[in-house]
Structures are given as C-alpha cells and as structure tokens.
Length: 61
Image 1 (cartoon, one colour):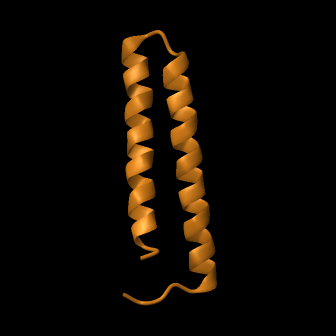
Image 2 (cartoon, helix red, strand yellow):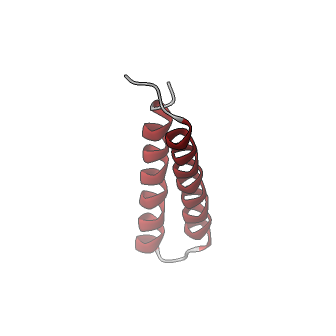
C-alpha cells in the first residue's frame, strides 16, 4: 500500500475524530432515551460509527 501524504493523513485523522464524536453522542442519546426502538436506533448508529472508525484506523497501519 502506498504511503499517505500529509494532507491525506490529516483528513484521515479528522474523519476518525468525527466518527468517534458521533459514536459518543449517539451513545449519550441512547442512554437518555426511554423509547426502546429509538434507543436501539441510536445504539446501532454508534456501533456503525465505531466500525467505521476501526476501518479508518486500519489505513494508518
């Protein structure tokens, strides 16, 4: 795999940070939610953001 240039690395870091923030927010929303279906929706969104974060981090290896 080709090396990342500085701009690509910076963009990748920003994407990782954004997905981590998204996951944290969705988990907070899920904790505060009383409706089980909406709670599940937030948890699934958080899990998806976590999965995407891990995929993005794999580009750093």
